[in-house]
Image (cartoon, rainbow over all chains, first blue to last red; front, side, top):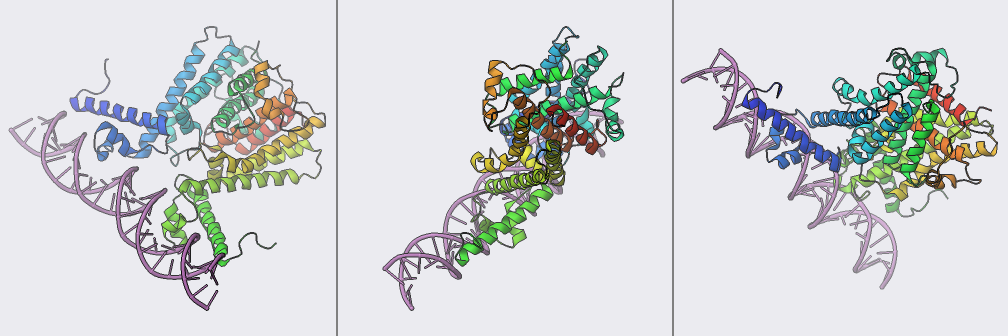
Length: 234
Length: 234
DNA sequence: GCGATGCGAGAGCACCGCTCTCGTTTAGAA
DNA sequence: TTCTAAACGAGAGCGGTGCTCTCGCATCGC
């Protein structure tokens, strides 16, 4: 099944050039950020006319969206890899640490790409449908751990009771897995998720400038604390 | 003391035009976002040559930085106002709810400005020294509640013990107030801070697209839960 | 082999940030 | 009050951007 669709020489060339554009643009993205990424610069880098790039991506935003999806997949792969690396699937604490640090390590290695994913949305709002499948991979890793933890009988820190409205608000997240999440897992799961990304964003975007000396130690501590709050530590 | 420095007609005109530029640019910022803000459009709006704007702001980034500071002050004012509105200063739970909802309400009313503050940094990195004094206002509101709570003898949920490195990492935040924060207040305070901003950012930037139906109810629940975790509820 | 389609290049449009120059206006010292 | 230096607004212009259109040429399916 060597290569997929392309049979003709033209189709092969098209696939290769598409790839080359994405690579060049991806390098620009990583180096100078999404705001400064320019179609003309990509064309220059590839030695072609800028108008030719538009044969492959209809607009700058479309190119950026493609990079967005690639970034989501890249991060998703890193997170899934870190999770899979824990051979003992019942070591939920280890898996939790694995995915949390995988996210932060990726974010620190690729700050511009992280900002593209979790910072302010750059284009109006990129087409959700295409991106969602890639974006959901990291979320799924969280849910998977929560799910396994609930099934294994772990219990997060006590939560306050929910009103009817609050319960209704969480219906979608609750029904994403089978068996459904209890209230406490829904609440603590969302909370921990927001705390992890909140901390990484605040750190990366410079809001902890003063306040925290050692980001590594602080994040490690936070992940420990969240694991304890989630009741993952046996 | 009517007006401050400006005595000459020229100085008055300068102050007024500076104000007009900021207003026009602020409107652009709020409506179409920081990326699309253009000096030329501001000049057109004010009926002047684009080059004249540069007499007042040396660059687009400088103009954006001024708007950044204004936004920080605007948010800071909203948060301080919400905190001050709680007449019973010992009602820490009420104050906590006040500032958390003030932040989110402001963010939802001014999504582009919130994104400018807490999304990906748009210019390289705007001069910290000018912005810090305004940026720190909302942080101070958090610290104030934490401080009062600790003095009043409230205790947050139990925390896991810190290693020496983790303790050292938190030295700056700990010594921001007198008396210094205990370990548990440092930890839970930072954690709650990150959770609040993480939740607002994830919501505003579309990462809860599926998962949560009713953002208002979810955030209200989160704030309740954090108050409980912080031990603010009597 | 031939028409249809895909493709690259170039010119061009409208916009951008920013700089420079050039008269004019204003402020402050002589 | 006069005169000089500074501030100012307008305009032209430079190099850059995203994007469109047209025009030849290569390639594909029939």
